[in-house]
Length: 162
Image (cartoon, rainbow, N blue to C red):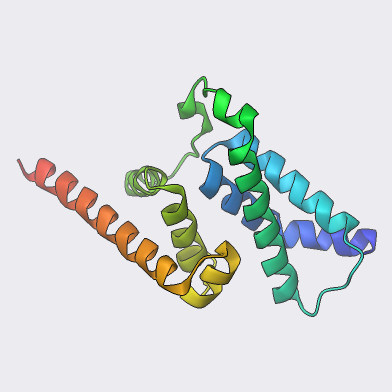
């Protein structure tokens, strides 16, 4: 891979890799580490990719694996975040912030499946391949995640009416 190809790949996929990692880890610094490790693997990768979509899928798969490895590490299990409020992005509209908080409160697999399906535009079958899960499992995760989000919004809406 040439320097120019690598720079183009970083510009094109850097944000996607970061968002995938953040969806798994809920921590900006760890997501940045995963992004850097993933891009380093891309830089060292000697084979050529069939297409840009193949490269994109490969990068997402590597980022998911890196995030899972970090979550399994003993260091990660022993640390406690000092202040999670500093880690959250800033949104222009309050409803975007509320949705983000609700999604981040979901279990990791639900968050990642939602992100890949709704934000990256993958089909359920493709999400299952990227997450290395059964098709029916991903369908269940998406259904449960939607149900949990719907329930939390109904609760918030009923509180606002009171």
